[in-house]
Length: 324
Image 1 (cartoon, rainbow, N blue to C red):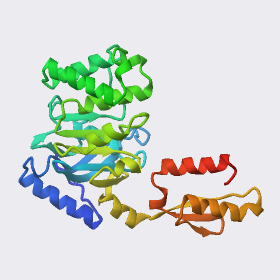
Image 2: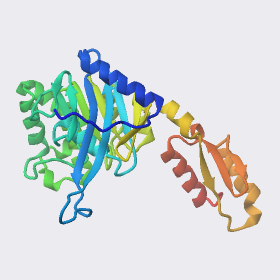
Image 3: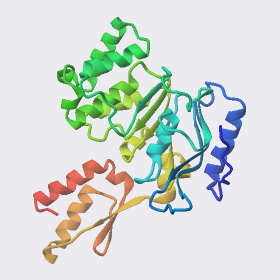
Image 4: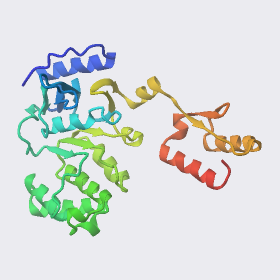
């Protein structure tokens, strides 16, 4: 393991505390304490655009990242595109080599060759065999996990029902619609109830979320990391970690994150007819009772607007009815 000699620099107090917890976990790693430990992780790529004839330049995708996840805990990984979320997930799963630092899963290095039965991974890209059917995918993964055929058949039937995949069981992966392929990847990741779960935006494109997703996330028998851009999914997590340019900027509860960085949304209203101002104001207050008017916009508390999908539906309905 190559040590990360890059100093962490200035960090938020809760990020410093997490780094100290990781140091302690490295000294006394027990399954009931920290199941996933990420210690001073760094990933560099060769920056081909910045390379010259005499010197190769490196692009740092992940810089000195440390956190841990306990058994029964779900950590939400939040951040904009390009923040390093998927890179972190690939390094934890062992699919990508680390530049420096280390990843431990229940005391075993994840940088060793993959194949451990205790890890379930749903990557952002659908990793499927084009010619194998949905059923064949599930049966193959069950066999790799050492499940008996009888047990696997029962579990596959239940997963297919929960995720509405029954009509696609004999369909080759190459013929699956994008949403159905995503469901299959999610099903493969939870098959056999592994103790370590990695989900990289698992519900993108899926039309079935709800209970199957929530049941999998809330299992107390595993440690999990959920990379997501959805606040509804992040609300299922025990803690959230915010990555910005490959660095950990916040780790803690979602409630604390909202309280620290924002408590409301701004809704801007453009009027075709100025005479409708009072009627529109009445309709906005009906939809969002605690909204505060600020000239041409409204400040809407987050608790009034969640889930956002329903809020947008309400606004669109108002536009169709010409009440907004």
